[in-house]
Length: 352
Image 1 (cartoon, rainbow, N blue to C red):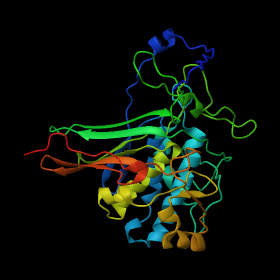
Image 2: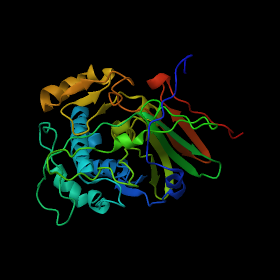
Image 3: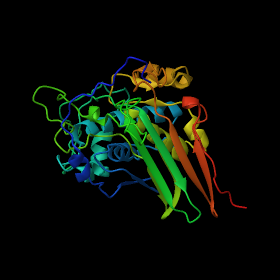
Image 4: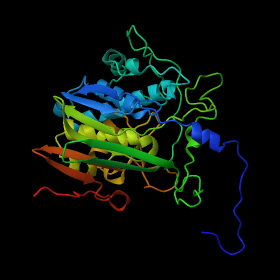
């Protein structure tokens, strides 16, 4: 709020109302992978969640996570995340401007070339991307690149109606307060999503699919999921949290599908996020656990303690909302019990 004597400074820009008028929302086919008998659908590029979470699930499909010791299963989760984020950074951008090898990134044969890099010790980040173009042989990798930070002022909504229609919707204004500009007369904030572009390549002469260009959309991590079994929806989940959106959704799926937690318990469980970084970001309840100690001593994983949704904005694993389809016209709405003060989950018109 302005105090007496303060003025609004209007910075010059080149965007005009004609640019807004020319904008068209694109309808794209979702990404799709099969995992433990489920069909997992998510967002296509320039969102990176569908390809990145999908690739990680393909890598993890080669392990029987439910039968492994939990520390081993979590080690495989962290390493699959590390590798899939390397491929995200190298290949995913706006498909109107760069060639995004979606089918390759989601090919189980490509996932096998990434899985074979996982041994008995944590890889050193930044790990190099793989080659998602066939033929898929060996464990070859390209040059490495690091992840760029993203904002975290994001919301996720999942809902269903009595006919079984499901909407999974994520929206963002990027950093807290977005651009700090409110549309006069309408009262909503404009985003500052342009900061999600990479304004410098990861290294001199390196290619980067997320460099800015006129009319180009920046890469996002938004990626709500709808999961089906035998053509029937069984759950939906999405998250906020900048670049940790992907690992939040991925870990909730593993908690629920592989580790047998109810969906509310899967959301509430302590989180740890690996984004091809030197350390994995761990919430206090995870960082202080016996599992974290095992991952450090046995597998060489390293952790940074998440401080919560404060600056820097990427320093916490994301928060989520979800929906469980119970059958017979019943559904359960699920939100965070504690993170960010707790979320909102309700049935507006309950069945009687």
